[in-house]
Image (cartoon, rainbow, N blue to C red; front, side, top):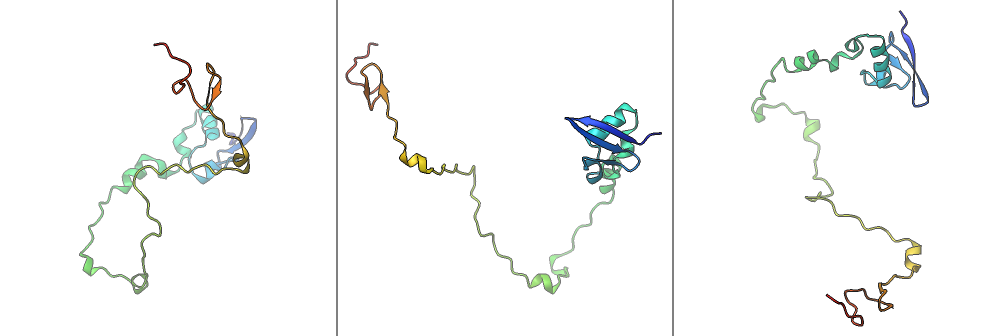
Length: 143
């Protein structure tokens, strides 16, 4: 049985070794979960994908975490806290985070923005600048 495969994806070549559970994209070894390249190989060879995933991602492990119920804590005054922790001074955060959506930041003006001439409105019917159709007094509007 062959364990080494080559997958071409987006003009790149990925080498997968199923025996060592490695792929050159490194996701297979780091996350211990199937990357897209490994999944393609397993699907084409009709292998079980569960055999190549870490046990942490299987339903048995998830159910095992809830198998033992957590014990409630005793009274706060009976806790044994080390002097190292008691000597620490905890301060509130330096910055206050405000409620709601943050305000938009204004764009910083560049040097060119300071030297540009400001554009003004112009109304083509009276051929004057500084106003628009609504505020024009010379041309009478027909309604």
